[in-house]
Image 1 (cartoon, helix red, strand yellow):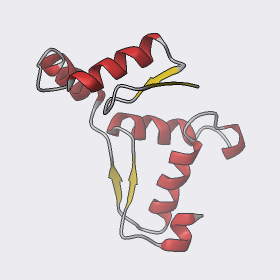
Image 2: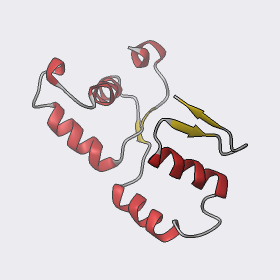
Image 3: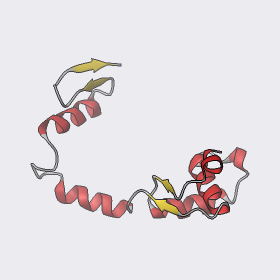
Image 4: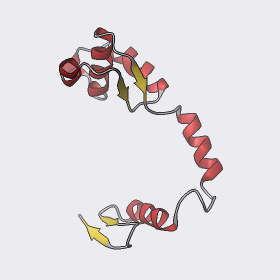
Length: 108
């Protein structure tokens, strides 16, 4: 694996702490070939652990994310108008991508 080849000073997984715990508990129940979701994260966690490389969690708790969103969603400074419009367009029209920098649209 890349982690084994490079031997980094640390490994970051873009998961919240609760998901790491849930994934490692669930992952121990199934053989690797039967792991449906998160096998790549689990492999990185296991490899880092096996090589004694520090593991860093790259996301915050889901509760913190939801609370921050609720607290800041309606603040004008939170989202620029271009980014907010682009997010809304992509939500309602998933095949249209709006460039928030110049307002141009592209279909996929």
